[in-house]
Length: 303
Image (tube, rainbow, N blue to C red; front, side, top):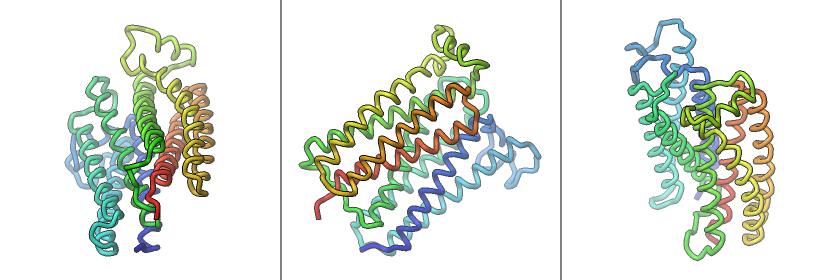
């Protein structure tokens, strides 16, 4: 059983959450994370802040849109319960989406309440950013699966998948590592901006540099190695699965990842302007969506 209207709404929820993620990146890159002080969910103890500060407006807008995202996911869960029968896979996807968006909200609240925002350079912020990034991937992944299943995609079959399962899991774990290293790099670029490319590269090599700066080199290396792996793994998945949907996704994914590599190089060469960071993150989110769809297609049950 499926509902076209529910499926369309599920895809809309994905798009809206990606926009929230992008605005969250702008909050971090613009240093607006402390725009409401250490108050949550209120902003300077006000429902609607009146400070007139740009940072406050940026942070408050992020909280409003995050709240809207939560409401949409709740509506999605209610819709899944009303439309699909007990035990249906769409219900599971909608339930998982709600769990991860609640965790996302709690992590965001923790960042504010413990003041792990703005110019904070503590190691606690690094751990919080890593947890935030992992949960964001899980949230977006469950939203994609919910929409995929609502659109008629078959449930995932874990048993008797052989090499397909191994390749799929390696791709997902690799994307997790890439996402985490990217989040750490983005934090380093925000806290310790470089005036020139050479200055930035030299800072990466200093033993006295902040841990996030010392780790910046990891992200581009992982990105190149992972792209090479995915390019091969995607072809193998398409060959083993041998169907049109998997083949199309396996062809598109490495191409978008190659575009992402180019954006990453441009981002580095231009000293990470905020607008380019947002574009880079947008394409990264698209890569994750395509990867989840490829894995879901490759591991789907045979009807």
